[in-house]
Image 1 (cartoon, rainbow, N blue to C red):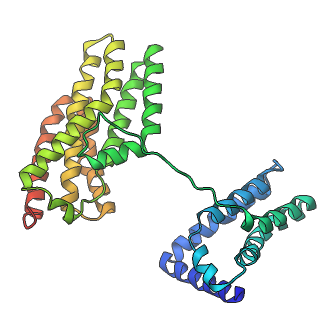
Image 2: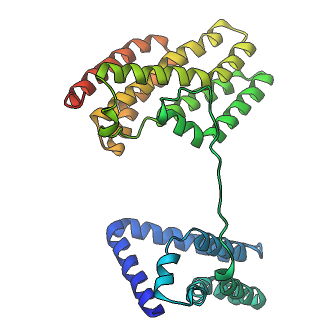
Image 3: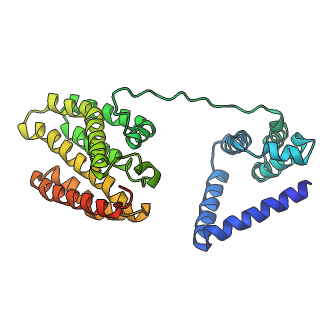
Length: 309
């Protein structure tokens, strides 16, 4: 039975190789080779055991086929033990080449004991975000994923402002604007569009969500900028940023209804929308063509989804 399982794994590996293609396989092979060399020549003695234990433990804890394998064999721990020992053999071989026989034996013993260790189930409680607009699910999802980055940017902006370097706060605002806009890079499903009465309702919903959520999360960075600014042009930076990020995010939100491919969407916004967003922060007159582009995207988005709304 174990030999049949190995054949199934090899066939699955061959299918993945065919799907990835020769160029990706060569790239991954080079990366794997380099990682192996770095691991082998690492001076720290704990490098190889830590990597082996982490990989085996993660694989054992996250695998989803245990119930299926239990229907094939009555001795699942022995079945898993053979597989884990085979996975640990390359790491044990590297330890033996280095003359660390005790570490090699310890890795094999760990692989043999691992099937009898219970899974570690991670429970994450969702963070409540009461100030964000509840309808903007794209923005809320983005903020949950990037909340650690937001905390770092806020910390850097405050520290930079305290030390008299207000440019750090500006850079943090610009970066946070890019992160906010990335939440709208995913295409919206047609079934979700049916919840709106018409295209006008969709636009108002998107504009309301973007304007409110952007202001709530950008306000701490903007307040820091205003409090520590010494010139009016630095104070004027935040309202210009606020208008620019609304137009930029609204443009991406409409562009995804025109272009369904995420790769093509990223390239088009990189060429068409991003230069006006960055340029308008330093030349506010560029907000006018940015408004025109956003209105043009709204028009073409309406034409593209006219059959649905």
